[in-house]
Image (cartoon, rainbow, N blue to C red; front, side, top):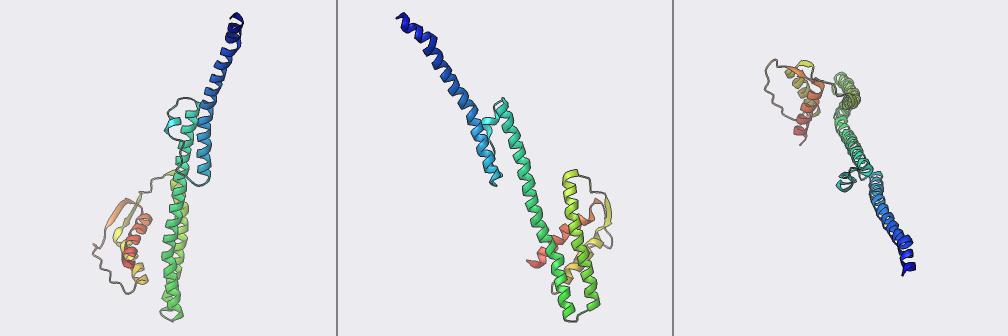
Length: 208
């Protein structure tokens, strides 16, 4: 049996061991690569919630590092995309307010109702539209730079009175009751941001 043993130990066993090692390495390499390929394809198709998963992330080799990097990148990217979608939706909602008032003012001008006052109202609402556009740029700057905007001091009563005046113009048949002190100074805040929040609450209440 020496000839058989010679072929067995010199060729067959090494070949089988090399084949098993090759299959193991192939599976070890290709499985995470296939998972990574699937995740990137799904993400490129618009499935922004797709992640490689914990099975590859828990490993401490290069594939685990790639998987963790991809999932972190995917998380940040999906957050940015979701933020931009919400920004567009909010911007569309906010810009309807001054546009509705401009349309109402134009209707009053056509009917000859307080023409001078309606022109003044249109100028005010055009400034509001411009301010919304500036706010959008400011919001993008805030998201990147994250500055502290709580630096303003203003009279909250004057702010609410101004919002009520605009709401009364847009909804002339509504009865709005306000109970506020003559002066209510508010510090460490943002007049523009707080004004938009209060205006949304009042307009939604009047509309619905």
